[in-house]
Amino acid sequence: MLESRQASWSCTDGLASRRILVIGPPGAGKGTQCKILSDRYGTEHISTGELLREAVDTGTPLGRAVRHYVAEGFLVPDRLVLRVVHDRIRSLATRRTGPVGFLLDGVPRTIRQAEALDALMAAGQIDTVIHLTVSDSVVVERLTARGRSDDDRGSVHRRLETYRRFTIPMVAWMSGLRPVLAIDADRSVTDVAADIVSQLLPRDALTQGSV
Ligand code: B4P
Image (tube, rainbow, N blue to C red):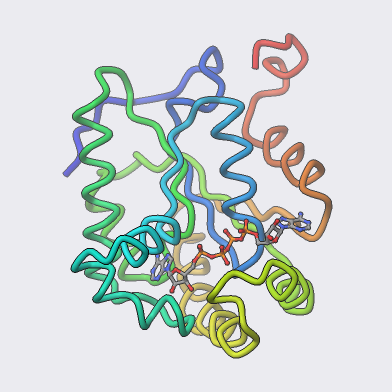
C-alpha cells in the first residue's frame, strides 16, 4: 500500500499534490486535458495508454504481451495494467520527498482496477474523479481524424463497446464511494480545461490569481 503521506492538498500548489483520476470513453480528451493540467500545475501525468504504447513500440516483454489488445481496441488484462500503474506510482513515490500527486489518465476502466487502485492508495487517497463525457458520434469523428494506428473504425467501435460494457458500470460503482465530477467534453479543448479547473480549484484561489 502506498503510504499515506498526503492527508490533504493546499491551494498554494494548485493541483500538484492532488490525486486525480481522469476517465471517459476513447477520444474524450483524457490525454489532451491531462497534458494541459500537467503543463500548467506540474502535476505528474500517468497515462496507461501512453505507457502501454511505449512498451509496444520498444518491444519489451510487456509490449509483446499487450500489442494485440491495444491494436485491436480490447482492454489489456487487469493484472498487466495494474502492474504498470503500481510500478509508476512506486517510482514516483521514491523520487519525491513531498506529497505524491498525479493525474491518472485512463484508469480504472473496470471495477477490478478500481478496487485494486483503492487498495494501492489507501482509503481517501484519491481525492477527485473526473469523468469526461462525449457522444459516440463525436468520438468516431475525432478518432478517425486523428488516425493513430489503433484508430481504425473497427477498433474505435470495439473501444466504445468495451467502455459501455466495463467502464460505465465501474463509474456507477465508484459514484457510490466518492463524488464523480461529470464534465461535458463535447466542447472546445479550452472550454473543457477551464471547466475542469474551475471545478477543481476553490473560487477564492482562482480570483486571487494564486493558481
Ligand atoms: P487511451 O490512450 O487511454 O485512449 P485515447 O483514445 O487516446 O483516449 P483519450 O481520451 O486520451 O483521447 P485524446 O485526448 O488523445 O487508450 C488506448 C488503449 O490502451 C485502449 O484501447 C486499451 O487497449 C489500452 N488501455 C489503456 N488504459 C487501459 C486500462 N486501464 N485497462 C485496460 N486497457 C487499457 O483525444 C483524442 C483526439 O481528440 C485527439 O486527436 C485530440 O486532439 C482530439 N480532442 C481532444 N479533445 C478535444 C476537444 N475538446 N475538441 C476537439 N477535439 C478534441
